[in-house]
Image (cartoon, rainbow over all chains, first blue to last red; front, side):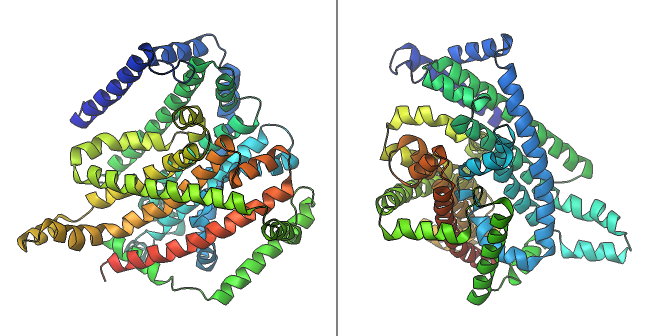
Length: 250
Length: 262
């Protein structure tokens, strides 16, 4: 393992030990914080007993729907904004301040529009994630060096080849950033929505165990959630690296 | 190099639009909104006239004032704290390579947590009220500021630093004449994002940890499914945020185009 990796592991281990210590010594009350060993134990129990299955399935299918729709629509929106610079210039200030609006306040609208089911939550994840994807697609398109496009023209590449061999590789880092953000924001939107407003799903279970003083269980749900989101991002990161390596460079 | 050039050319096209064009754009938005209302019905989406009337009513009777003051004093404090902590820690992590490499994945992981779910911990540490709201704002805003500052400091070209050393600049001269000008554009981009997220965090904090403020009003309206109030408050927030976003964005552009090699 690399040296920064080792230090990172040591830091995390230190924090965990510290938390364990202050909990066991009784310096913080057990309602607010559970010792890490108990958190892990409750996480394992939640998975083993199958208690988590239904909520996890609900949350992940909702998040998956949100990610897929946000990535597709966001990508198309980014292309459209690139294609029509005038529209983009008008929208810039709105895009720049988009993330200061708590989007889940739109939940009641979605309930009236879609009914009382999982679609309003998916819609919250979607509207939270789609703009990140659009902004990053736009940045990617804007940063394709013009020389490369002219070279492609000079070589009489077809439109499809230009997109496949010039534009996409040049924009790839931004598209991946958009994808990673879309994943994270979909999770945040859906979980936050469940947390505040819904009667099922992982976010709801976190809120429910908190309100019923089942602290270890609450942190257990949180730990599972963070592990999964982290794992998914790590996987995308690896995928991205492999693609760059195949292209040779960076 | 080609990247910077492409960047600069993208910025050059962006000379300011006239206020008249913006007025037209806002009118067009209102028109689209009106059509949407006609389409889905005013029970689902209150129309622009109705909403603006409601907002005007809230503002003119002064019922909104104490909430506005509450929210923006919390937001102001959160922003100051987030900027100070974010820029300082980012600068240290950027300058010291090893600690930066150790911290970066951890920061990114923290950034991707749905922070709403951390509110039990926040309430434990700060109790109900102002402190918890400010803390919520800070944890949302500080990480992007830190990450952007870190990468800005890392990206300072080595030859600038060597040139400074060759000219025997004092540490304070190095700071003001070399580090600052080289970092400012990217740090400012970080601040712009930090601004948005801090406002978001403060509003979310108010939803859970407070009995006052715009966030609290929004949660109340949400629980009562009072769509008119929600729309009016959202329109107010969007207007404010877009105005600030516009200002920050134009400063950002100017800094970026000044930094790009001509």
